[in-house]
Image (cartoon, rainbow, N blue to C red):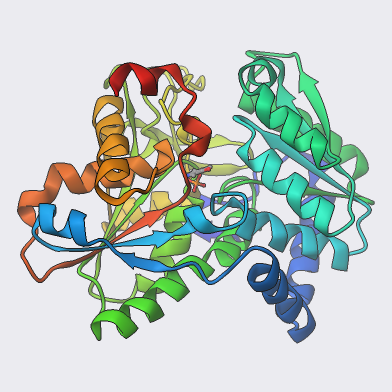
Length: 388
Ligand SMILES: *Cc1c(COP(=O)(O)O)cnc(C)c1O
């Protein structure tokens, strides 16, 4: 079966009870997404509501420091402050066109839950968000944000009461109610068609950046850098450059160190395995049990990664590396001071890679960093205060 495969990776490893829902979604997507009506309506929401296109900012101070030409793709300026809305608006609009009456989502730190609540509010669709009870306590502000926008947050008690338990619960609910409910997945993970569909919604990032850099510089960049959690901002940025002679770098969460449980670097340290319906690099122990992850950036705290990234790692087209938390916090402070732009801790991983590798770049080299989100959500964190 080659459907939804990226090399050996991807697929549809779902229980019988979910097969009908996944198949209906695939058919809906194939018939609705290519239509002129859908594309025009989505671009209306992206432009007039969410604020696309986002700027590609030339950073004079960082460029002077690094000795090359550094640009930031400003997804931090998208409504809600991160790229996640590109995807939730797309999936929610698709749900509406498919006649669904309700949106279901899972969330870890709450960012995807908030982005789904926004899409549900503006498209008049009720939203139910499954969230681990532990996460609800840690992220009470995001629970409040979701509820403010009319979403219902359902705390999940099982397991470690965190993201993967919330995913399991949301999938169970979707299997039981897929007739009238759509499951809005937050990254390029899960069974086919999600990795392809979410990529297609996020590709707007790279399509814009490619056109913008040609306008600014008259040529393509030498290097493009993005952080990788599930991998949606990175693949959305990389995809339009895959066929070009452009170095692509994905930066994973190095956390507190290389020991199991201390990081979120699935591509660097994982082995192929199945999680949430797809075969991909997965952090697992010798018995195939999923290992808990850790990162200072909540959005990178996922033990697997989108299957397309697994393929791009194996073919060597994209280079993946991890940076540890201390370098990330340093980059967070650096970009804030030098450009007056506070990056999300997730996005600060990409900045940290540039800081680490700065000696490799020549004066005329053009580097684009995908700034996936803004850091306002992170400035109340104790760990940030300790370092600054
Ligand atoms: C959620 C999030 C990420 C990680 O998700 P991807 O699917 O890997 O993009 C990265 N940056 C920000 C700002 C996020 O909110």
